[in-house]
Length: 303
Image (cartoon, rainbow, N blue to C red; front, side, top):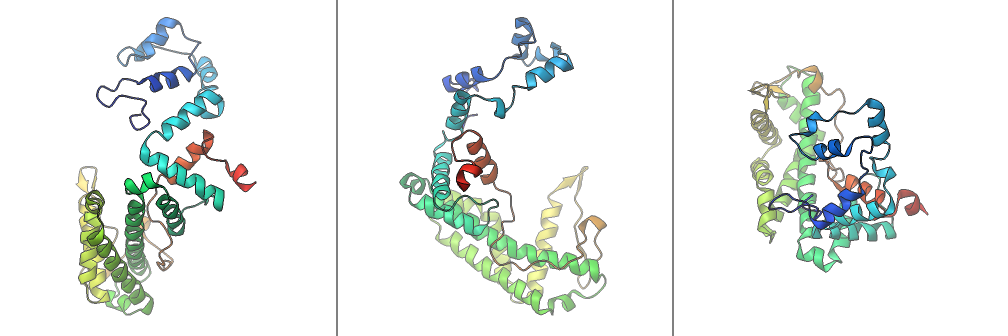
């Protein structure tokens, strides 16, 4: 609401733009004017009742597909009111015009987005290309670490009770731990050379983990560091008032069979630096831009 300039950050009251957009929303005409006023008051709203039939009638117009052109235009303005989101929108528009937008985003797609952002002076001033660089560095490191962690899950599922050193002796696992060290070094290098303090601060936690991986001078030590990090992360999460249990039990020599929901029956795919391990807001942002005619739809893009 604040980012879309629809509400005042100081008191939460609607701005003129917010009032104009609110006026576009369908009124519950099935209610009396007195009850409609009650709905605007959090303390009185619970006293308002409506039949299921009337509620369904109101719902017929309370969704984006029923919005008219004026409401969509105002929603589009709100979506891009923030400078950063406006720059992302402009870069996406340029990407759509060149090769179309991807159905699913990966690191190659992000690199294309970065290239478009570099052509926008305002985006460069805001540091958005550097943000993408940070995402790429952290994602490649995290993907590499997860590949080893999933290999541990698979080994614990299929070979519970065997020494973890037997797993580490596997050539594929050695390649995976080498990839962890390579991406850890790249992440640290990015953090050391990044000229934006807020971005360096944002990746401090993962940067510390990367230092631990980088210092591990053998595949076994990489595995130990990943298991240590997993214990640390799980101990910081609470479920029912107690710390969450670890996915994999380890007695220092052998991995214990995980609980059924944590088991993995197939060996993991190798990390190659393409997949994104975290959900980002690009897909829903693109969807909303398309719904409000700010970006061309998939059908228009195809044509």
